[in-house]
Length: 231
Image (tube, rainbow, N blue to C red; front, side, top):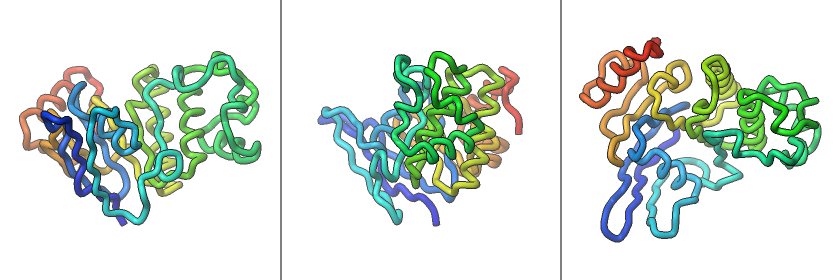
């Protein structure tokens, strides 16, 4: 089985903003700069586009895209995803034993359920948000730049955790990011998005080692210059 999006088209009355297609067996990273169409693609899959935008999606899968049921998301900033004045257990709308299970799955003690978000670190909060998303038992998990607000140590830990859980729980993973380095070891396939178009896609290792498009080459070279990129 694979996740197949035969057409994802987003447009206004005067222009086409995103026009892409993609498929992958397990995990896929959609990489691009700000304004490339990454966020709009996620919103389209979640059914959350603004009213002034029209979307056409054709997906050839054995499930429908339904936010909160078959599709869940881990947002960019965990600090804004939770109410700071409410204990975590009161924001986690599942039975106590279920909450404890998913907290253990993401490496958190169940005692943290009784804490307020302000009492946890950024890395811990991102694990909480991941637990929330996983508790929905999604067929497709979306990652919206999930490590942007984290330090380098927490970023590494979260990415390794997500990669491990994806293999264990066997859901489809779509990772949206501007950081081409972050997907190494997490996603088997990658697509490069520019101006709402997919300019290059394929196996992650192949794209990183032998990019065909000049824009992709520049992204990878920038990663080497920042001394972040590792194969």
